[in-house]
Image (cartoon, rainbow, N blue to C red):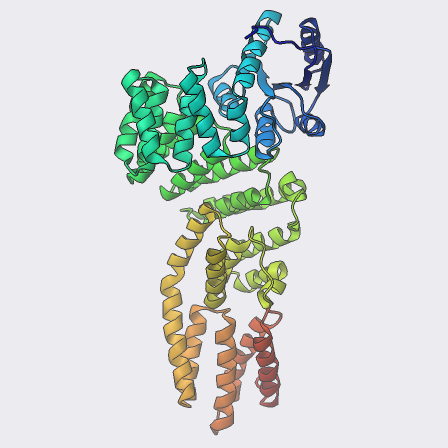
Length: 547
């Protein structure tokens, strides 16, 4: 194979925010024979140009100022499935610190160039990357199209003929065996390699396989040995973290997760793992910070989503609800409000169909509920999703957890349970939100159970025309769940039946409680049947001078 790449017929794209570097690099490329060289200053512009007409070579600076960075450009092209198997993608940066290098290499660009570099270095790297791309076209094509079995077969062919890329193909083959849960094949392949030579990357693949085989202690032991040999092996550190979680060793897992993030911080998956483990350890401050990091990383990436904003706000309130002092509670609640104000023009929200006003109202509702201002919380909840609660219209999944939490705080256990069950069936919630919600439901379970028992007992007394006893029980139920609409309606109905069927009733003593029930129900998002019942009871109460 010719050692020199012919650039005369290659389309080259430079993405760099510095005009001077664009000019310099373009000059180097043209001196190497390139004729079609274009330059863009932003990641978005570069992606748009590539989508219009793909380039053969992309030279992308990691730091592009505002907007997407070089890693996010590669990530978006990969995720959108538009990156061609023949395209050479090289990341360029002036920062050679460990977090930057590991984060840049994590998505496996074809190469990585550190500024400044010479024409000779550029030519050598281009030649090497281009030759690899051409030799492994069948591998990359099937990989990008997610045809994993075909990719495994293509890797096998490369190994069989003994090309210089055999090790890469063996590694990819094992990764795909693991990805497709062909664990026996993965183990056979990696053990065969280890018999030839105990390469750290092969040991790492064995650790990955052992973890998938539910053998976390073995995975931990292997990955620990790898990290000693290769301190920058971020994959080994990730396996250590996941193994410790599987073994239930949460404090060491948290320490390991923090080390992983310090090594390569620009991964949403890694930050999310840290948030999960921190919360399980009761370290709500670290969980909150990890969720904030996800929000910042996602802001300019293909993963931009309003869910990240909601999860960050949720993590702040989670920290507030577990705070030990009033000062900490106030600090977190203020932080949530300030973040929400900043988010009004956030890209995560601007490009979402979810109105800012809904998030704002729901955040206020959660804060009011936590501080015992239940009526105010109820009004804001109605403002945010009142229409959806009164009908069968779906509540936006980004808000579902917070709606359920407020309903639990208000004592609307039935509505909360229906929404939670619907979310579980539809698998609408991410893992972090699911865990948060499960904990909150568990905390309210005792109150909910006591309420249900008293409420059902009251209903039985009412059915037996024991109105006085039923009233006492409904009153007790309302003390447990002050804004439960069902309990309020039942209380009013019992008062009316008591007045209609018993002589010498001290109406003035019942009027205050009855009026309070109607105030709580006023403006609530009631179902059609409850709304009709409310209006009927209101007419009856007015006739009896109860309101």
